[in-house]
Image (cartoon, rainbow, N blue to C red):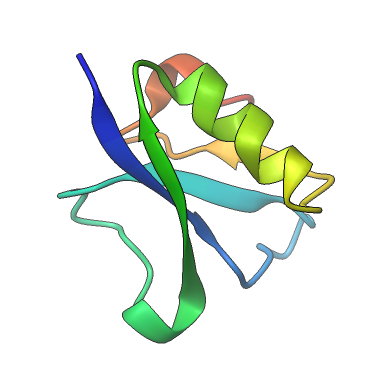
Length: 70
């Protein structure tokens, strides 16, 4: 199922930038997120975040759990 994905431009304390699907209750504020695109899976969204220069990325535990590492 395709969704719109965003990356948090602010890194977590551990250095990762979280990727969120639109509608997530834990979405960063508009000023702290970058649109990644409309993807079939969070894996594609993480790949796009890396292409945009976010070396350390992680899926949100709540909306992209399949891609959540920790």
